[in-house]
Image (cartoon, rainbow over the protein chains, first blue to last red):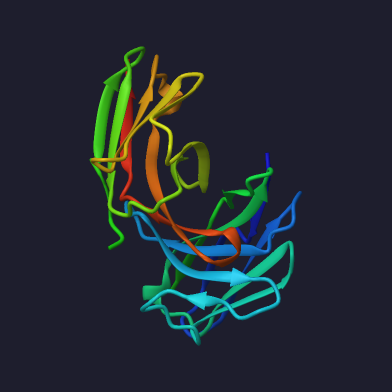
Length: 119
Length: 114
């Protein structure tokens, strides 16, 4: 099956610093990738849709200047948390979409997640 | 509106069947998905069902869809300890280009005991 990786898997940083998280589709090209945030024991909340070669589409309530998304190639999207604060501590998960078959059925494959802790 | 609801917890004995239920709101969802999340890990796609189907079986997994009631269920036969995880159902909302936005439920924590 399709594999999506994330790096780093875990990061601890000081308040005020910026953190970059990478999401890669390893064996397929993904025109569209998604970034989610998951708080402990809660569901995934979509933050933004990342489109290769164009600006990301952010969900309501997500600050685009704080969560910078770049989708520079068909296999890589990055999420940068700028000026991180303790309330940004969370589990960030990306997914990459693949269209397959004559009906172009879409399947989202998820990365393993990145746990961010801001001190 | 966008809302997916699931029961939060299910406990079953090893070897029994597990049934996890989900209700969704968007009748235009083309596909409905079931994902599994183990502790500290990302989501693993378990199975999906196309909206014009009533049932789909895949080895130990059976998905039932009642489109009229917007009710989705996942049955795991012969549940094993390795099935202990959080199970998320998700409905889809269309985006441009054939892609879809996934709306997740809160997740059902399945605990399997001997």
